[in-house]
Length: 95
Image (cartoon, rainbow, N blue to C red; front, side, top):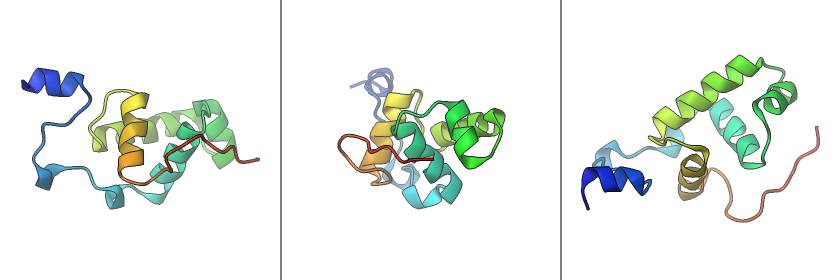
């Protein structure tokens, strides 16, 4: 599989020592990732965490860059693989 096909399939061509680490994420990034997995919008996440929408966007951008993904589906798949979020249907938490 060429590097282009690997990237299109959502897999990283990075070597194992460059693989993303769940521990490298901050507590806030993990919290935002869990809310994204629950289907919350940036606005809803901002309201729940009492931060601006722009701050949520920056956290999501940093998450995607750190985990080397390009879309939310890949982000959630990586989060499941790293055991940051559980596999299975999301459970909504009350505000």
